[in-house]
Structure formats: structure tokens, C-alpha cells
Image 1 (cartoon, rainbow, N blue to C red):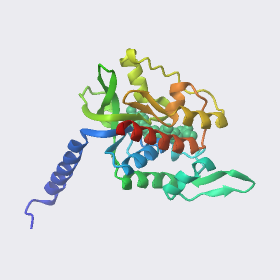
Image 2 (cartoon, protein in one colour):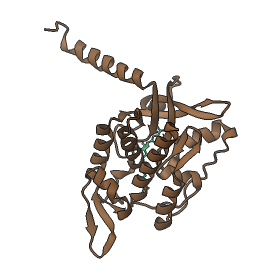
Image 3 (tube, rainbow, N blue to C red):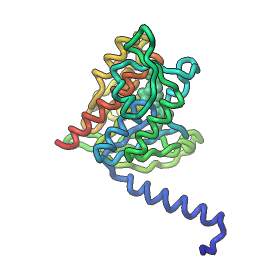
Image 4 (tube, rainbow, N blue to C red):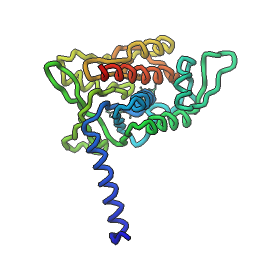
Length: 261
Ligand code: 48F
């Protein structure tokens, strides 16, 4: 029987278990920045291939833009091109009668099952962690990880030095602002990364181009989801989520191949 008071044991176990895991994460295969649909999809397919994957999410919840549905209505649209991914995550969907290429999903189920899929595959998701920089190596120039800080510290405006996570690949899955690429663009001009931001809506074109342009930006740094639109100045597509899933799967496949060669 442990004689320490319960309050003391609560603190001790939380700090001990968290510290052990964070210490194991300090050098891993893939960092995914953002637990939205693209990041969670990538995390599942990467972890399933046996890679060590950490997802850093600055909020205290999964899902990114999923929860807001379309203008807060609790349904989203996915095209049949991503049906296999919905099945892999066991997400139920309804085909639209008379518009057979489109499927409708429930936001809560979509969010919950993407998260479950990533976590059960073995990805480690940490909430309240903001990625605010990358790690740079030269000769050859490459990105080899990220700097992380508690979101609460960022919000407080205090200057506190970050900790570092060294990794073989980093995915910017931060959505519309492409935050990791924007930092790299500002701080490492020699990478020639320019982030013009996304354009106005053209759903069909954007769905196609986001998937096409998903991939490696510079050695070690990859892009998926709406960050692709921000990076390449593509139009937005609104609440149709097929390209987020297909982009997450595509970036995972590319990284698996890159890391095995
Ligand atoms: O915004 P988000 O859902 O990006 P996504 O996966 O999907 C976009 C769609 O939701 C939707 C759309 C598609 O039709 O237009 O908007 O590309 O998820 C991005 C996640 O990244 C987190 C943010 O809180 C969100 O959950 N995030 C953003 N910047 C950082 C971050 C950062 N610097 N550090 C950690 N997390």
C-alpha cells in the first residue's frame, strides 16, 4: 500500500509518465504539426507502417476545422475518391441520392474516428503544444525537426525558450495559415519558400490541386491539407473534406518511401 497522500501521487505519476514519453519523443521519425483531418490521416498511415510519429496540436482538442462543419451545420461532404479512407477509419457515410459521387458524414463521428484511427495506429498526440520553429541543418540544407512550446506560454506573451524535437520528417498540416512553412519562409530565406496564401473558392479545382501538390517542399519538410493551398496560392474548397484525407494519405506514402530509401 502506497503511503503517500493521493494529491502527491497524482502529481508524481502525471509528471513521471509524461516526462518519460516526452523524452522518448525527443528523436523520432515524423513530426506532424496539427491534429486536423490531414494531420490525423497522415499520422495513422505513417504509424501503421511502423514509424514513430508525434502529432503536436496547439489546441486542447482534435479535429481542426471539422467541428465547425459547414457554417456550424453538423454534416460534411466527402467525394467517393476518398471512400477507401473513410472505410479504413470505419467512418460511416451516406451516399447522396441522385449525386452518387458525394458522401455525407457526421462531424462528430468524422472527428472522433480520425482521432481514434491515428491514436490506435500508435501515433502520440500531444495537446496544448505549439510548434513555433524548425530545426535547420546545412550541407545539405534540410529540416530536421521542430521547436515546441506550450500554447499557454505563447498566449501569455512570456519569453520562454522552447524544447526541440529532432525528426527525420516534419509535416506542416496546420491548415489555412501554413504556420510551419511561414516560419521557414521568414527565417530561412535560402530555402526560397514563399507562402502567398489561399485564393477564393473554386471547390472542384482546389480538391484536385491540393492532392496533386501535396508532398515534399524541401528536404525534411512536407506539406498536407489546406497548408498546400496556402503554399501554392490555390483556391479554397470549403466544407468538402476528400482532399484533406487524400492529401494526408499521400504525404504518408511519400514519407514512407523517402525514409526507406
Ligand atoms: O485547420 P485544420 O483542420 O487543417 P487541415 O487538416 O484541414 C482543413 C479543413 O479543416 C478545412 C477546409 C477543408 O475543406 O478548408 O478548414 O488542413 O487543422 C489544422 C490544425 O493545426 C493546428 C490547429 O489548431 C488545427 O487543429 N495548428 C495550427 N498551427 C499550429 C497548430 C502550430 N503552430 N502548432 C501546433 N498546431
